[in-house]
Image 1 (cartoon, rainbow, N blue to C red):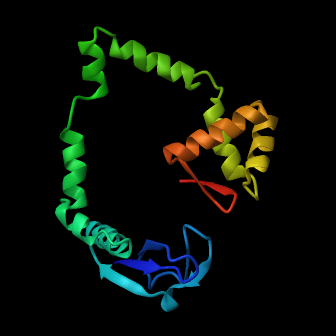
Image 2 (tube, helix red, strand yellow):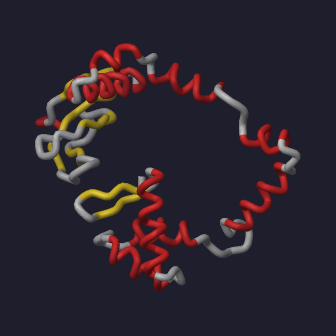
Length: 176
């Protein structure tokens, strides 16, 4: 069972898996803990895809974009279209005369795989998860203890947030 629920603190909507099995649910945006029995259920379904689609429709309606949302295919159809669109990275590299296997090996070396060392990005991501209060300063300080200069850690944290790998809310970061 999946339910689309909403936070009465920040108006965030998210999916809760089996709402009757757990007593509490935490808002992914503001962090407030709610009793699941008291949360408003906007939609319930046995199918996760249907619940995701309902949440998307509710968010579109909330923003006044219902008409635009109605014109878009179902999320699962859009995902399939993205998978089928264009050429994959390997095909692109090979058509340009570049050895795709050599690129994979170079990427592995650059990310520190197999060498026992971690990349700066991995250190910063791990620092976000490791500190109790993941502010920018705390994450940069923790990353600095692991060998990443504080200024570089701040830049990497900003990059991770832009790419959607971490999120920032009220000055606190968390890994997605």
